[in-house]
Length: 121
Image 1: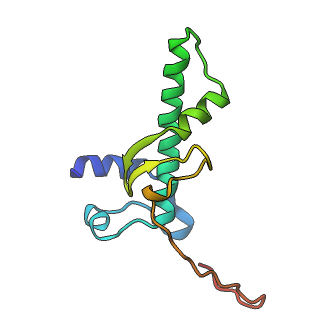
Image 2 (image 1 turned 90 degrees about the vertical axis):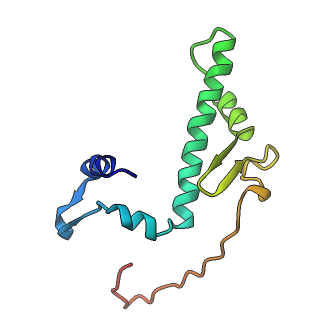
């Protein structure tokens, strides 16, 4: 990523003045830190919703309509197929979820904190 683009992106990220820091990262930070799997899936879900909205709009336009329905958007989403951060994204039309061949599985162990524990994550 070129440094001018990175500076522009960082200029748009809000600062958390109460923490005494901001969320701007340098170019080398992005090169050395892999994103969390939750961030990748959230990103891909949002991109999928946008791409499927575009496809639903094309279908509506082909029928001389200015808007598409929720059902048309849903149908377009279940037929989506695109390459993204984690690889190919396909949605299963039978279960409305990501196709098992286009994803990987993650097991997380979440521990309950005791009621007296005050630390934060």
